[in-house]
Image: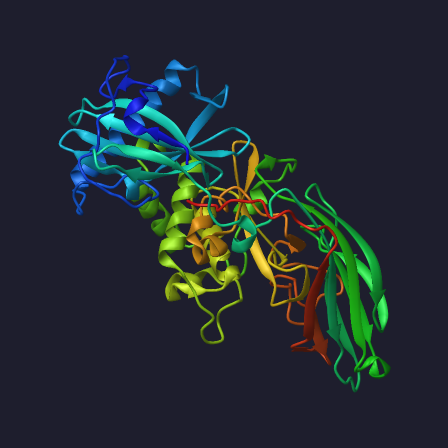
Amino acid sequence: MNRILASSLAVGIATLAGCTSTDSEAPPADQIQTAPQDRPESVTREKPSRVTLDIQEGIEHHIACKTIADGGAFKLAHEGGELELKLVRVHREFLSKLGPTRHFACVDLATKDGDVYDVDFFLEGEPGNMKVVETTVHKFNGQPYYVWEQQEDKTWVRVAFDGAREDLLGVITGRDSFEFIYRSETPAITVSGTMWIPLATSDNFQTVKLTTMNVPGKQTIVQDEVYGNRILVLILGPNDGNKPIEIRYQVDRREKGVYENTERDLARYLLPDRLVPQTDQFKTIAMEVIKEKVLKDQAGDLVRARALYDHVMDKMRYAKIGDQYGQGDAQYACDSNSGNCTDYHSYFIALARSVDIPARFAIGASIPSMRNEGGITSYHCWAEFYTDGKWWPIDVSEADKCTPLATYFFGRHPANRIELSRGRDLVVDPLPASGPINFLAYPVLEIDGKQVKAKRDFSFRRTRMVPRLGRIVNP
């Protein structure tokens, strides 16, 4: 067990009231805690809001001063190199008063490439004159290097963290390879029918090879007008009823992180969709969330987007109740505080766009990580937002279902998924009688001009065995 006394290090010392350096020893904590935990705990159960705000203001002032002194980036020595970071958020829930003048803060800082470092700060002093007496990297992209344990002599020690594997939490990092099988079936057809099916395409994060396509009817492949999705259109007659549909792909997928923007038209990602409208209500909510969670001098888009992400997790409950969920209806999500992945991400996108943060939607399927073949329960969707020339992938519904993955899913999508289409209100020729397609994962089927629920079945077979070496991912 690798143990390092918390009081043995004194790194990155600075006076929080100004920007000058001073020397000090890290104070010991005052409370005995024998069990390992994620953060040092406050001496008192109740954390006074004024004290908490003092700590937040102090650490943010320290980061701002050091960022200026370091030439525009918060520089931090780590593993023989030097990180250049910018503030994402201060974990207000972990701000702690360890003693009369002893404090703890935890902060997320990100590189320009989107890697997020969770950094622990120990502070000493009174409000307005707190000093950072120790700075250490606690986590990388949500993966902890250690947990905290307090000794009988009241010092905190770091204990090496050997946690649950990532695959047990549904995440495969790096790369994944699998066969994806998309099946459906036509119903009995008396006169005519039309079916629209998404066709997966390759991009910078997935290489897709269509290996089998057995479908009935007259076949046409079209593209939607805005997002460029490839869509298979089947024109069906009476002889095409009760016929199986099977499309097979070989997929090589790479874990998605923050990536450079290559599109010229970002304005379209600020425009409303039919079920993701622009309303005063969404703007008011977004502004209130940002005002509550973000200090004025830290109000960049990255910090604001993280505040909205946290708000969606705090507000929403993953629940498939009634017949309104699953439409990607931002207003329904806002009013009901519940829904599935489409509702979560529609709500986030509506909030982000309301404060001029471009955001977009994509849908496909999540490939199980704990087994290597079998059925897939349903579709899954996710979102991305834009800031500083790059797209940040997020998955707020998965983060909410498994909070240890909250930091991972702010800037990462795992390798074990396939994207089938992107965007909302898809316009194609021929267009369904019901109008633009809300989103496209399951087949859209119309019989005699009326929409009918189509059968569907997803399954997979992994073609690359994944090493089970991952560690737990934690916020």
